Image 1 (cartoon, rainbow, N blue to C red):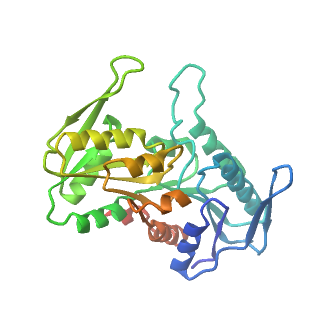
Image 2: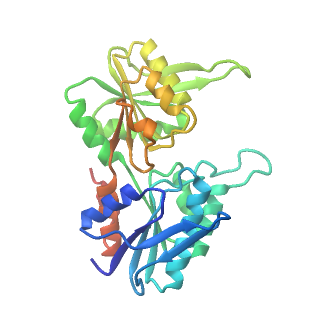
Amino acid sequence: MNGMKIFSGNSNLPLARSICSYFDLPLGQAKVSTFSDGEIQLEIQENVRGVDVFVVQSTCTPGNQHMMELLIMIDAFKRASAERITAVMPYYGYARQDRKVAPRAPISAKLIADLLTTAGADRVLTIDLHAGQIQGFFNIPVDNLFAAPVFVSYFKEKYRGGDLVIVSPDAGGVERARSYAKLIGASLAIIDKRRLRPNEAEIMNIIGDIEGKNALIVDDMVDTAGTLTNAASALSARGAKSVAACCTHAVFSGKAVERISSSCLEEMIITDTIPLSDEGRKLDKIKVLSIAELFAEAIERINNNDSVSSLFHI
């Protein structure tokens, strides 16, 4: 490798170590701790002058803490004369706040982009941004990877010869679901959710033929899992033979794991962009696919100034 080193904050050390093992490199020596008042303290314990530095940090729970860790690490590497600093963010926090949805509301995803750039990041590497236009919030290069190759490989093997239908949980995810359906060779269905009056349950209309088929709900992230499990129930009630779901970012806040456990979902397939909780690891329904190799290949291409987009010629 061309003078490359990989470092990590505290948010996703297992993923960072998996990426390093791909290159047979040790994880960079950096100690992130806190003072008694909660301020973050950082010690870079090796020379990074003239080095191509990659900082792996998901801004997952606690998001503000992990974001500050990332910003402080970037600033430290900049002041230590690293040649290039790439913020590797498997999960880009605040991505859902990408536009004004009410008067006097912030666009927090843009604020995060400004903070990363100001701290000294030269490039950002992430995966399955909640909104693709977030790339335009930056004035530095942004590589937005897709988890599709990892999921598609798994589904082609699992549903070989099966009657599979890819389901978008809402109108906003139709493009993603259509892409998966095309790659796998499956049919497509869409869930149309409507709430007629406040405090009334949502009415879910299913567009497409799902009766007697294996339904697979595809989404970019799952937070509380309320919408997901309701969608699974609706599909099952409409005659789906089985219902499974997948998402890149398993936020799983609140009672998400409990809801998935008690739902009709046969399997919940996720990636390791966000570490799974102890409760989640105990649930057999949840299967984790690693995106470490995908990130490693992208990092290698960035380091060698090769094409990253060619990774997705599936």
